[in-house]
Length: 167
Image (cartoon, rainbow, N blue to C red):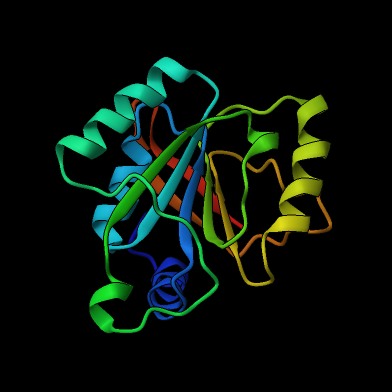
């Protein structure tokens, strides 16, 4: 999933611009760490359960991943800086997360109808054109702000070929 054509182009963009990889519903950080370490990018995770955020922060610290990464809007000054791996975690509701500078956003939580419309407006307002949203379901299909770019099959505990939708 993390090495498909659409996402490879997004990674190259993150390397050249300093943009971030983000996860809403980051739990103890596994999606954040996987994306950051696989792609060698700076990443942010937001989770509403503070106890899980504390675990993620301690793991980031234990493995020397900077926990203060922020998008500056300035392209990296060198190729080494472009591939600096970092992870930052915040205990926040998805609607409070600052998505500024996020180029690839993973939605790693279930969404209800009430939250959906509000979160969709937030993502449409804060993510720049060309940003990608990866979801566990087709939740953005009916949203005019988002167009599905790809569906990739992945093996998960409940299915051998679950579709991950990329918008």
